[in-house]
Every structure is written in C-alpha cells, then in structure tokens.
Image 1: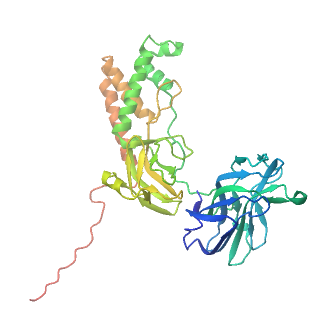
Image 2 (image 1 turned 180 degrees about the horizontal axis):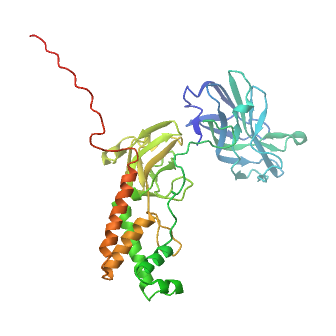
Image 3 (image 1 turned 90 degrees about the horizontal axis):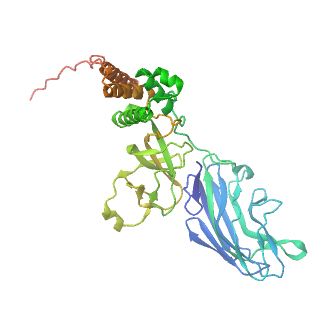
Length: 411
C-alpha cells in the first residue's frame, strides 16, 4: 500500500515544505487538515498555497473529511468541483469531470452536506523545477455572472497529504508477503473423507449405493473432526503460516480479529502467533511487546503503538496518531469448519484419514487398528522431518575449527 504523509509532518527524505500561505477563511487544525469557512457567494473561496521541494516521486492528494455547502442565492445551484493548480504547467486538476454529479444545493441559505471526490496530482504532472507549489480552491459552483463558476460558501475540513512508494495516481502499490491464499495440498471434502473411511471399514457396497447405515455418517464425520482438530493443535507442521494486515485508524486501539485487510478469506488463529508488530507502509517495521500493563492506561493515549494484547479482539497501546501505520501479525490461520459435505479440510488429508481410520477401527474392535495408528505416526513424523527443510542436525556433519596452540607467557 502506498504511504501517505501529512503535509505538516512529512519526513525530510520525502519532501521539504518551504512555505505555507493561508487566507480567505482557511486555517490549519493539525494532522494535515485544513478548515475553511466562507459566507460570501462571490468571493472568499479560501487560499492555501504550499511551496515544497520533493526528494522522491510523489502524489499530492486532497481528501475531504467533511463538507457543508450553503446557497444564499435565489436559484438552485449545482456543485462543480474543487481544484488544485500546480506552478510547473499551471494546469488545473479537478476532482470532478463533466457530466458533473447531481449535488444540488437548494436556494435560501439551506446547508447541504455531501462528500466530494478526492483531488490528486501525480508526479507525472509536475515539470522539472526543484521548487513546486500547489494552489487549492476547495469548492466552486455554477452560478456566477455569465454562468461562470464561483466559490461556494459553506464550511469544510480537508486533509492534504503526500503519497509515495511508486504510486502514479492510478492506485496503490504494495509488497506482498503471502504466496497464495491456500497451499498446494489436495482438496478433500468432508463427504469424500466420510466415504473413504466407510470403504476401509467394510462398507464399500453401501457407499456405492449412497446408503450408509443409519447414524454412521454422523459417526464418521465425528471421527474426522476429532482427528482434524487433534492434528491441527498438536503438530505445528499441520498449520500454515501467513502474514495478516490491519489498516490502523487514528485514535483507535481495538481491532477485530476478523477485520484484517487481506484479500484471502483465511482468518488468524489468535492462539498461534509468531510475530506481532507494526509497519509504516512496507519500509519501517517495529515489533510490539506482548501484554498491556494497566498502569499504561494512565499515560498518554496516542502515539506510536508499542504494546499489544489479544483478548476478544486485538488491542494496541497507545492508539496510533495517524493512518500511516499498519498492524502486522505473522501467525497460523485457523481451521475451516467441517459442517457440511462440501467443507474442505485444513489439515493434511492423509494424516487426518489415517488418524480417523485408526480411531474408527478401534471403535469397532478391528484387529488392524494398531497398524493404522502406527502408519499415522510414521506419516506425521515424515511431515515434521520435511518441515526442517535445509536445517539438519546430523552428528559429525560439521567440521570443528582447528585447535589454536596455546601461547605460554612468562610472569
């Protein structure tokens, strides 16, 4: 995801703001936001001029947080656009294009609230000059003399930001940390596992006829779920690790376990965490300390998060001051439910089959139950051994360094 920096706190290695001029009812309110109030239908459109020198390619973006338009004239008017102008080409960049949206402001001074589109000036629009500036008009509407567009009275709050990380204005660019949503293991459903177990228990004819004895489907499904859950919790090799990401919100400490912003529907198992931290985009990463001592609640409530705790949700402390941070967790995703025939196993299906079959044969008093229990153990051991990858612990495989002859010194 592209990184966004507020214009009033942008790092010097991104851009240097050399001057800010405000007027016409515009004032700064901190955290990159501007507020504007104007009651005149013919002037006072607000003045915001920002001079800056960029160090990297960037996008200037203006996002409206709140917008209240007021029409003091006698006719209904239509909102047209907000506008940014750059000094390199003096090109005007609008947030709307014809046909204009039907944001009609009725006559008689009535206040109408709506959300204009954001404004963006991509780096490709700038010329080669070192010192740049933007001139911002927050609102214009059709209704001036001769049908011209004039400033719209009202009030607004807008956020001015620099956006970096290679975005050319067409969308976010981010680094991926997961290969695929799912692994490459065979896809086996609950129904397929039930039928395979029934055949190995001597019910092949009934399976082919689609008529297992009453109560048997439920029993075999229970064996499957029990083996599935046992293997998931007992052996880490049965669980697949992923990176999970939450977009953090200024002033918000609590994040839903299932509210991560990843495209993959897999959800984090809160009991299987390997690393928890935060990042500012894809460049600046820092770990979070597990556990929030209640004493911390008496200190400042906003800043860069340093601690986390998982209860009914994920809590961070302190709450972030801006939206540039993301919560990152490396951990295992939880088991998928096994409730209906088409539900797919999360754990290695062969391991589940051997474990469930050993339990089922023992339940029916079959003599070869122990054979399948041994097969299940051997199969799981082979999976664990393979998970070590290039990490091998073979005695004598490492050649010790030659001994260093001691040096004798006289007193």
